Image 1: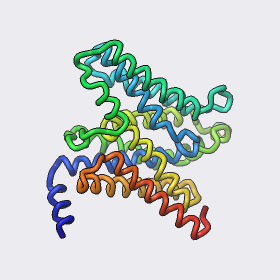
Image 2: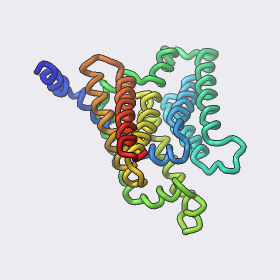
Image 3: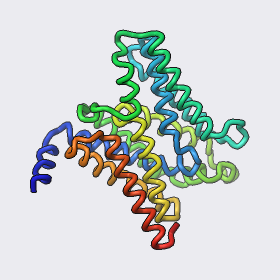
Length: 283
């Protein structure tokens, strides 16, 4: 078959294999973390943190900081910790805070890049589009990038395996977790740091559009069929990986934008899961 032949030809190239590996691993991490994020009603945290990271990146460019991650990563982690903290007594709730940060950080960053232009900053408009929609850099990944994603995915999976009950507790009721002796603030801090690192490392490759979709869609799709926290976590991880793989292969074969293609595949799978849930009375 011509399609299969073309696919095998593409897969014979190292850059395509690396893109598939990284795309699948990012989807796995985002899906696992997405269960907690969605259930805590912080679904747009991917957009918020990626835009905060963009704002910090613009500041680093204006200040001519050579290693921009020295500023971007700490700032994003601090914001993630603040957003993930209990907000019952806050005047500005989590979803509103994310919206403010998302728009504010993107606007301030873009304004700084125009007011204080830096010759080394490159194409400002291109940077914004790359942050939102991803770029072709996912097809030019180095072995270091792939290894970094592998290590990160192992950390995320092990975190969920060894601290499953802690994650379950802080997701649904932090007060109950504290009453049972769980150091929920510590685990919430670790979870916030992991979320921030995943988003910062992936936003330059796949864009905030894709990382937000990978956080939300697999979880919502799994919830249409499954009920328990564990089954939703596992199902969302499987759905995220499958959608990412299918989307990446389709985008390569059809020469379509990677981020948009993966998001569309997620939408289709969500619709199918919603239909299955309706038919079997699961939702």
